[in-house]
Length: 198
Image (cartoon, rainbow, N blue to C red; front, side, top):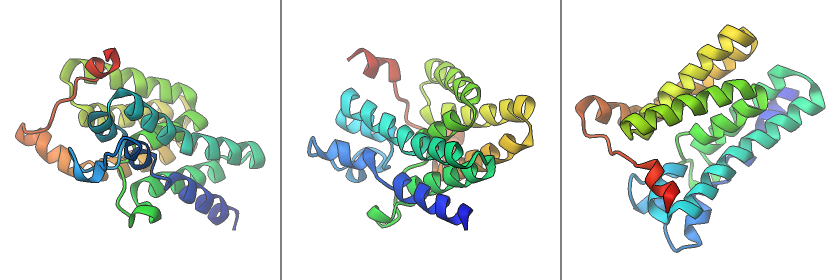
């Protein structure tokens, strides 16, 4: 029951669509512009650096906080992982938006920070490197997530490696259209540094 309870808590918090709510303050419906994805990158493109950056931040915190709380209360890494899984599924399939959500990168990052902050920092290093070199956010996200997973297996063992592998694979499946566009050379580039300088 603890797994279900914490997983459900993670889901309903993770399902809060900040990347939809915050751009709406500017009159922008991210479902109808750009990629149509309810995620931080599309919010950044559609609503600008301030609201886009806040969307990414809150999408990260909505998993970080419940996962950190669940682990602090229970001291059980499996329950914390169940909370993280709930939050990631909630972001990807939010009940509040008819189950049409984002791709889970920021939410996975938040959960990873709560479970293994060195793994999360490793992800960010890989992510920024690939985004800087290629301007492909999707590629950076996928490679970064699996790199953090490999880091977790190498330095923390399977107790963290397996959950991160599951989280990364969920995000990979959510990125399947991006992967197809990457392979065909039609994926959209995003100059993240250009937005940061604005």
